[in-house]
Amino acid sequence: MKPPLAHRLLAWWDVHRRDLPWRAAAGVAPEPYRVWLSEVLLQQTTAAAVAPYYARFLARWPRVEALAAASLDEVIEAFAGLGYYARARNLHACAQEIARRGGRFPETEAGLRALPGVGAYTAGAVAAIAFGEKAAAVDGNVARIMARLAALPTPWPQARAAIAAATAALVPADRPGDFAQALMDLGATVCRPRNPDCAACPLSPDCAATRTGEPEAYPRRAAARARPIRFGAAYFALRRDGAFLARRRPPKGLLGATLELPGPPWRTDEEGGASAAPPFTARWRRLPGEVEQVFTHFALRLTVYAATIAAVPRDAGDVFWVAAADAAGAGFSSVMLKAIAHARDGL
DNA sequence: AAGACGGGGAG
DNA sequence: CTCCCAGTCTT
Image 1 (cartoon, chains in turn red, brown, orange):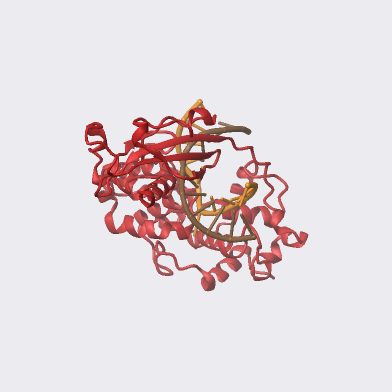
Image 2 (cartoon, rainbow, N blue to C red):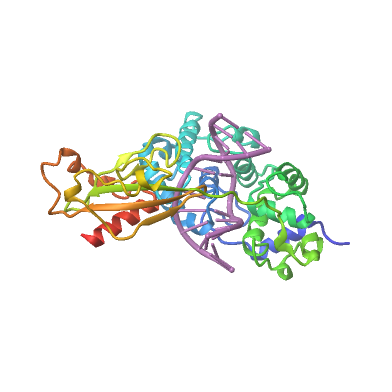
């Protein structure tokens, strides 16, 4: 008689588990703060990208009370480059909520779910990993594995509820946290989106998708939407010490509360965006090429202008000379950093 | 139920 | 280029 699926998965995991910085040693309960912090950073973000951020967050804010005492600007700065900056705002708000409760996280999935930035996945993951609750954590990896096990014809996310229920039914009472992490490791290293290694998979005897010969066909997905292009311009002056002017974006929405280079609003037509000349036209020049950033739902083409140090008029207004040195590196998206590097090369 | 929300990496 | 990734929130 075959051992149950969860048992076989855990046996595989005990040998093949990934050694990740936010994981405690085998058999040791990790700190809830570290589990929560890592799970938020890992939302829609790969483990490799998160690792250096996690190390910096933990070194700077070793405990939730320290994170709660930080300013939102500090948290956003530490988040710069990770994307989905609503996570930074929610992380800060959640830390303050936990601090108000005396520094203790809720210990149940339902209690965790009510916290800012904690959705179904993160609540299940923290409950299972940090508190040993028999909870499921359905992320992209788990959804893919479950869809393949059943060769599920329903495309994601319509199948979300069914997959969540099916996963919850598999969670073993004795090792719920290990089970959650085992599924994620299996998804990341074996049951990959492309080129799954079914020969190395402990679940392949149970897997309907393996038997079809086309495991990659699952989960089925809906057709992708067309993505419009928006045009923008950014212009700035670099001070001799490398500082430059930045401004704060609105508190919510795209890149909410992060810093950006000054420029006109993004447009869907090129006329009003990329070709729009910056103020002080005579003193600015357009840098060769464009900087392009592909967002989830549109592509931004940013034309970058720069003024040489010598050409920046000292009487152009205080605005160009109040650029704070501490603005550098704080909350800029990748495109802005590229633009700045581009401009520095051109000066 | 559908969109919005980022950035990096793989193929 | 397209697709995907340790998802959540808003409407």
